[in-house]
View 1 (cartoon, rainbow, N blue to C red):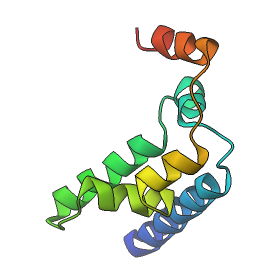
View 2: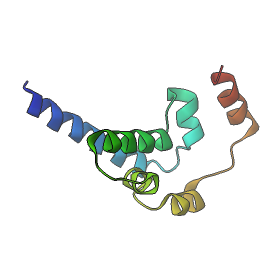
View 3: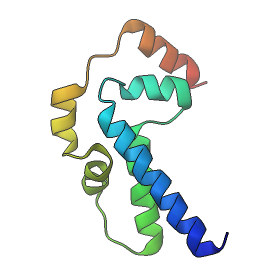
View 4: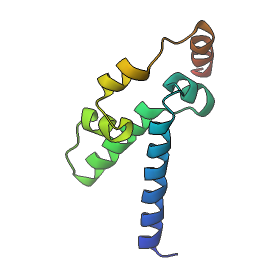
Length: 96
């Protein structure tokens, strides 16, 4: 595989991951953080960092909209639930 093919495959895999996360609104960010150590917000920040590294102007809000498929505030209002005590405890334990 050459560099261009690798780039295209990586981009396709990223698009599929984002689409999967958009479809799985039932999976909360705290669950993702507790299981994998990253969430939609992390992915948004990585997207913005890549843009910054490439000299492309992207705000964090724009990056979040790329990942969430809508403004972040809208996604939170529609899909985000309050973290349970167990979820929060697992998150806090994983920070160490």
